[in-house]
Image (cartoon, rainbow, N blue to C red):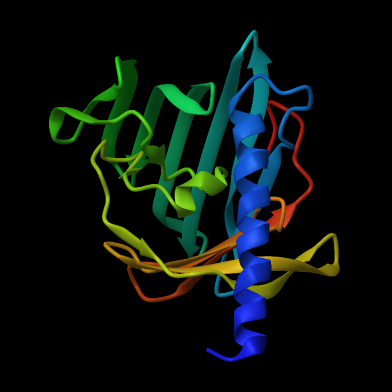
Length: 228
């Protein structure tokens, strides 16, 4: 390994260490809440929906409210709809509750999870299962997902096999400006790419839909509660 490559890995390691500190603070009772996040969802460059993540505190708990809405139309007629509403509760950097409802073009599913000692008790597509207490939902806002040994599919309530490659330095466009970010290529059950800012904040997501068309999450200013 050459010196230049080793130096890049050293810098990435420092960035990841900083991310871990930031996410630990977000999971605990932090003086400053994580910033609300909002994304337009684009298919072939056309906006087809949105994904919002909003944060609030309740004592030592961090509440996370997630809303996803997608509608694909053809000749003015809706040919596909996807909706998900999810609520997470975190305490001390760990998930203590999750409630998720999904409507995947008429196929409805629900997931609930509750802390149960050092485990998570989950009710979902596979019935009741138990996963490790440090499992992380695939809601993407939490940078800890990158290194999580167990990742929870928030639509099905099962552990999902995702392999996350080491980060690569990249840029994303935020507020019309190129911004430094780390890119993570993901393989396994789903092939995706995640981007996070150096402080661990989620910045972008990209994958291919069932028809092979590229789907891209593009950040925009968060909308007020109760609106897009």
